Image (cartoon, rainbow, N blue to C red; front, side, top):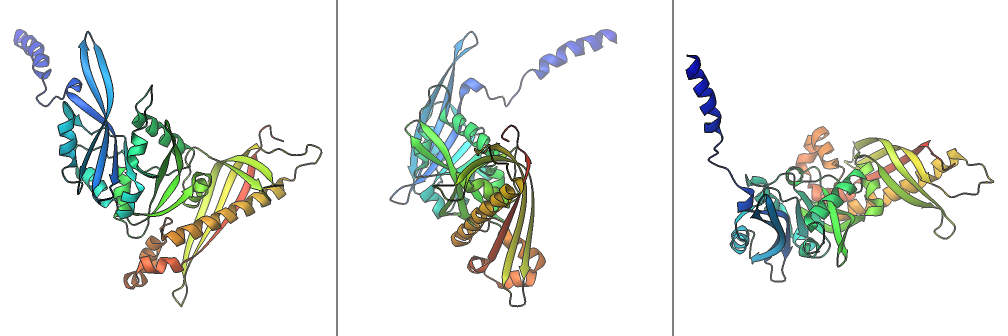
Amino acid sequence: MRKIFLVILLIFPIVLTGCWDQRLLVNRTLVNGISFDLTEEGHITVAVRALNIQSKGGGLFEISDELVEAERPTIVGLGLDVDSKISGEIDASKAHVLIIGEELAKKGIHPLVEFFYRNRESYLSSKIVISKGKGKEILSVEKEKSPIAFVILQLLEGAEADTVIPKKNTFTVWNNILDPGKDMILPYLERVKPDKVTVAGVALFNGDRYTGSTIPKEKSGVLLSLMNQLDKTNRMALILGSKKDGRSISFATRDLSRNLEVQVDHDEKITCNINLKIDIEVISYPQDIKNELNIQKLNHDLSNELTKQAKEITNTLVKANCDAFGIGRQISSFHPELWKKMNWDQEYKNVQIEPVVKVNIIKTGNVF
């Protein structure tokens, strides 16, 4: 009995070593970045950044990065065209970045997101971004050390940590599209040099359509704070007073508290009050060392400046018809009868949004 047990123990691991559905890395071409654009004829073009991995023996591999393009009247069939131009088995399960050109985004991104969301081999954590101009211009940037898709991924992750852009991927964008009571904002990228890509801010959406309006990165942190989003930090630089004689200051947000209240009066006029309190750490504040610093006045001046910026941002949102705060969701939850009879796309432009920002300096470090 003991001998039989030992034989089974030796044979069992050997049987388990085989895997009928194994996919060897050297047989695949890994897609790590994809862009979609709209042509002048109304067709859709796709550009794919792919990594070819070839075994050289002895545990050595040769990796090459290539850009492959295809064009069709719709998204259907584009994958087949790309696959026919790439050697080996194409694998898009690790496509880290999906870049959508701004003109195509204005037509609506629902078909593109649905294609990746419903495909069982897709990567639901792929970052979805909007590009200024063509998405291919971003994806075609050549880097010496690392493929551009990895560079873009690191750029996005850094901007997310600094609360410059929201964390958005295929899964969260799909959920946003299905939510009629809240609009989304997406990272907005720009190619500034032949070999450089930068985060330009955030793109404002109405439903699944890009409105053509953006919030620049210098102010996108304020918008995200108003949306009650703060990652590791949020570093900002402001000029208090006039640009000519103003005082420059840079600081980092360490904590925030936001209260959003939607009110509907007897005339069905909708008002949204946003009260934002932020605790900050001053990083730089050049001043006359002969004069004693008035912390209370600095808190007051910062509060006024950020409230002014917040009002400009909310005006831009209303003008772009982008309900990034989810005011419609509040109305549908607490005023369902009103929500059923109104056309929110038409009514949103009449909403009065009143933001107020209050700053509290909690740390100054070695500044003063």
